[in-house]
Image 1 (tube, rainbow, N blue to C red):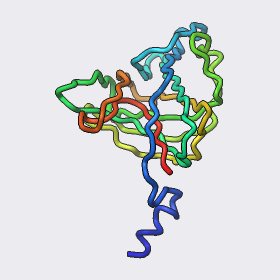
Image 2: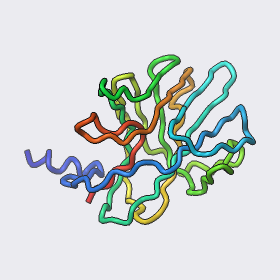
Image 3: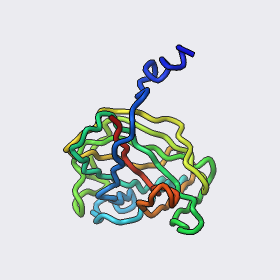
Image 4: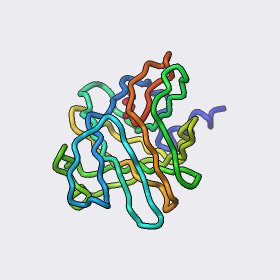
Length: 189
């Protein structure tokens, strides 16, 4: 019993932390390898894709303007709301398993100016999810110090070289309505 209390600490997870805030993206910027010099403006929906025949990829650049509150530990989540009443837009195409990665980047994304060719470098890999139409299963997840009062930026990109197309519309639903839909940043104390 005592060992189970120590496991979160051993693996770098907050043992008794409370969720204090959920941040939603302020930018979702498409980055397309087939249009390497085209800068797109932010959208409310996002696509991540990989075509094994052409090698073309679409990544989504994500920007969080993190509130300056007491959250000290953060994590990213990709959530699929399956509430049939709301029917949130979400589709998967390609070859299963449908894997996506979320990687932290230098905070240099600029709405309407960042292209595939000038995109910021990846700093480190944070999360991997296997998606289905009913869920997002976390395979790898990393907790990190919250960048309170600053910008945090990430890419959502294909997690393998299998054909993939993931489409979602970012939505902020309450827990009673099935919860958020898309990528969020959770802040814990």
